[in-house]
Image 1 (tube, rainbow, N blue to C red):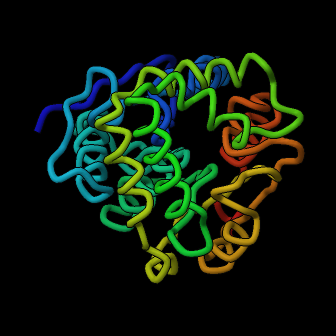
Image 2: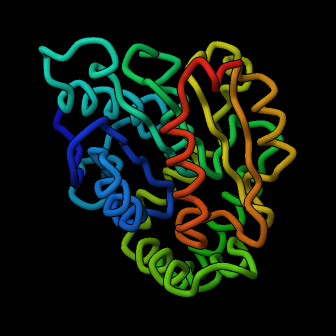
Length: 266
């Protein structure tokens, strides 16, 4: 299996960032730079089918998770022991679904989990949103920039940073329409709700107050099923929390990463 494309910066514990269906490795550009300065090895991948990463077949969360596992194994030195043989996974949207699948399959590879604007399947708006966006894509003759201009205003909140929304629009415009359709279908089909109780790593769940596809009720319910997890709803932002309010988002994540495991789980 070919390794997916990724960008890396810094040295220290590895934080691997997995973008959503409408993103790319640049979706985490603010975090890669900031986390590297905070003493982490910050890595953001291009999910298979995005950027320079070859697609997987059949295209779905399981295949994407296997590609992620392959990347994690390649990133970790074989001589590493204990916590150094694992990474922090930070997944947004579809990337959060991939992260859930990875930690369920290979829990020893994941030390902590951050799920941003991501659900386990039920109570989300992904099925309806996938149908709506595919219809819009058909109507625009596969114009991803036109789709981004139509969709993003409904996915971002009133306090969203203008530069962050602009970056989200740019990332979405670069996505292959063929891949995007497959990614939307993968999100709509994902359902790992029954397996949430098998996640036993410290987990932080983040959503935005205005997130239409990962609403607070769904995130709160997920947190109730993952032992030792906590959830936060960011005011005034929507689905793109890390770009709409990067300073507040990073403060939440870094505080979580610096917490002692025993204090977090109790």
